[in-house]
Image (cartoon, rainbow, N blue to C red; front, side, top):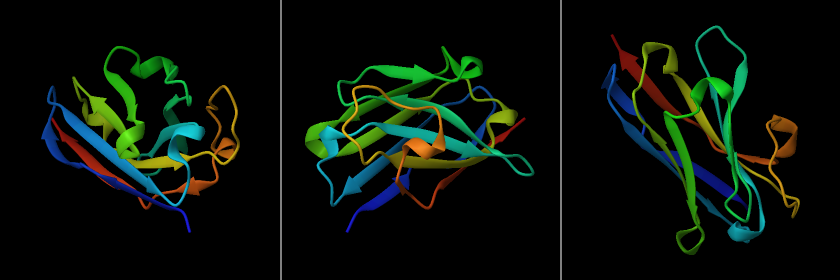
Length: 125
């Protein structure tokens, strides 16, 4: 049984930083692409970033330069380093794991089969 669990969310002031973590068990972690999505209050879920099994990365254009995704395959852990946080980054952040051994990673939620429950990030102004 695959389990995906996020952690690291919290309340931070604008301009601050947080690092989110996501552990995935029950699958061969290093074989699959991983991603972060977020859903702000009253908005649709949106893609934040993804990372291939070869650690190639992709980012939403609006987040480039502030967020950094990485993975530690030995620890079966995905990270999202978030710097220069803004109030508009306030959202529930979700980790997602793929189930197909592709070379790339997708910006679509359809590209991921396993999801965590989310971790809340709140940025105060």
